[in-house]
Length: 117
Image (cartoon, rainbow, N blue to C red):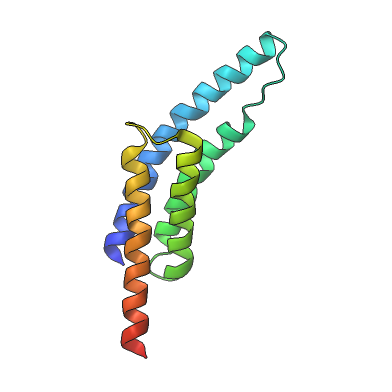
C-alpha cells in the first residue's frame, strides 16, 4: 500500500501543478469570452483542474487507513484528469501515476483479503 500511496502523492502533486496552469488558461479564456460577449463558460475546467488532483492526493492519504476508498478516489481522479486535461505529453505522468497507484492499492487490498480469509 505504501507504493500506491507514494505514486498517488507524486501523481497528485504533478497534477496539481498542471491544474494550476490549466486554471490560469481557463481564466484567460473566460475573460476573453466575456470580452467577446460569448456564452462560453470555463468553470468546469477551472474547478475540475484543481479538484481532480486534490481527489488524488486525498485518495493517496486514505490508502493506508481505508484502502478501498483511497483506490477509488485515485482511479476516479485519473479518469477525471484525462477528461479535463486530455492525455498528452504534459498530463501523461500524472494520469499514469494516479492510475498505477490506484491499481497497486487494489491489488494489495485483494492480497490482504485473501490472506485474512
